[in-house]
Image (tube, rainbow, N blue to C red):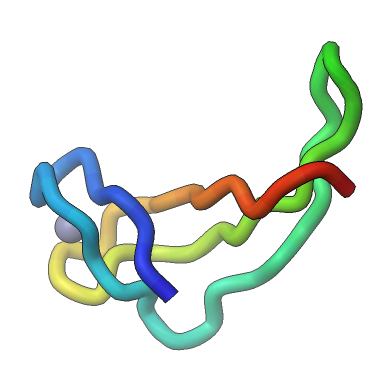
Length: 51
Ligand SMILES: [Zn+2]
């Protein structure tokens, strides 16, 4: 799965070990994928949708 990396300024694949989790927000909870950029290791978050 890909997400936008702010350091590479482009979309990158997640490093192995990315985790799907639920993030609580003001407008409800959302499912997100959290992991690291496979190229530079920067943390990336991809929003998957409403939980
Ligand atoms: Zn990167």
